Image (tube, rainbow, N blue to C red; front, side):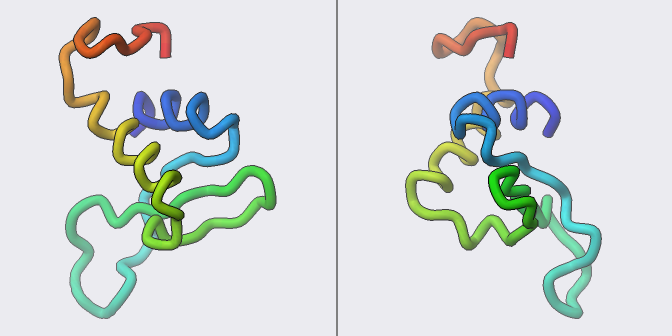
Length: 79
């Protein structure tokens, strides 16, 4: 998640950062990552489901990028 956030912060101009939700969204057991997004422009936390299509794409791309080998697909390894 740390590496994904480096990429997301760059792609979003410093606006968004992903964080693990402290509690499950419902009464069900927490599963998966249960992510929230920190919006640094207004200082709020919100569910990743509230991101727009473009914002959601950037978040997904940042997470997918950490699953590839370094140097593959043109990612800057300094991120």
